[in-house]
Length: 195
Image (tube, rainbow, N blue to C red):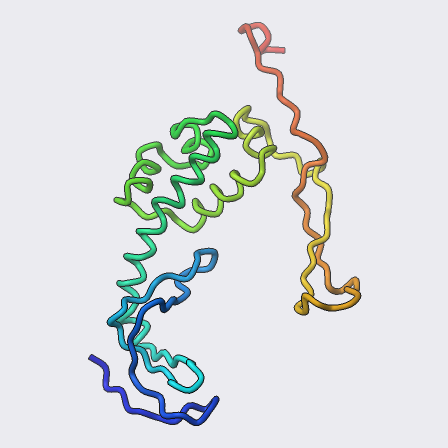
């Protein structure tokens, strides 16, 4: 247990104390929704403004609980992404695994909750679910062609209500196909392989 000593909240001046409760969330990993903190987990909290004050020890004690919550979230999330790829592109789990560069058994273990997917695998599945041309390119084994990408602008202004964004409020992103990737010719005879 930690040795908590009450102190004054620098935000509002109220006395900070250990508190538990329902519905509290904590960020665990980037790109993952905030995860539930156990109802009985004590966190130094200001009753006046609601500010929480996490010590390294508190975070360390919470980590195993967040890991369990992450595993509960991960399996259904990966299953949903695989289902999207199956519905949209007719892929089976072996094809999805091949495109992602993992074995079918690893993907099955992730789906069943006996293995944890890497951040890279999660992001790759999310990107494939959102980008049909990239899935099609992988299905036919075509090489990525950066010359067919069109730059586009992404708004990055911190103030969503700014009246007129300036040029500095945008960044260039290169990775959108101008059109669907071309299907490479598939050789039908041994003679066409030599050509």
